[in-house]
Length: 302
Image (cartoon, rainbow, N blue to C red; front, side):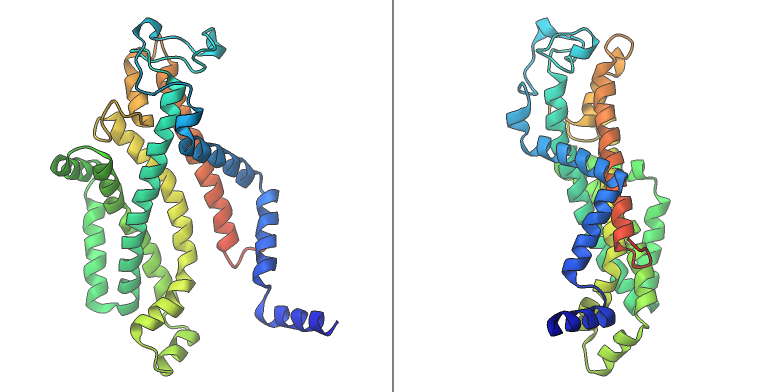
């Protein structure tokens, strides 16, 4: 009894424990229909990407000219090709499954690069201020003034189209969002009592930043990063559609969509089905991101 009373008193003073918060967040996930739908779709996409060689019916690069432009099974086609074939007889389902690997890899890698760079610069800009803040923010303003497509073409022209090029383009073009969010959070935290107390106790600037400021600004950055994954997937698909992304015959959702643009009237499934895959994946990421925003917002009661 005494132990329970002590735990209740600690919870009253310090707030709910880690276990209690985890259970509360799990309950909130179950109660949120958007989180459930988004999480289910994301789980399917991640499993398909991870197990692509085992779950895809065919090799995505195999060409069967005699079976070209077969419609999907639900549109009068054969069960051998559940989502039909493209103009050179490649199985659309297999290409969509393998294309999910590229989309997820590019999205996560670009967010990792852009998020790490933007968080670091935003933290330094907001904490030190003065000239450093002015320099970093002016660089951010300059990059925002350059159209994304122009920047992408310039970088890809130098590096040549490919996986590395597209990741660098998306990562280096997205750091500004994280930097601005991180800087704004740092400006609201750096004058707090616990930061001043750490300085008064002799804590170094780096220790104060990493131990006291960073943990208190990371939640909004995580939410932004989650939502940015969807934006990066869309951007990769757009660049691949324009021929600036990963080059054929590697299957990408944007590339598959481009393969069918000349056949929209006769073979609509080639462009439509990968487009639906992009739509569902980005929608699922946004649903999970919305739930994560509520979970990490201390002003929202779950």
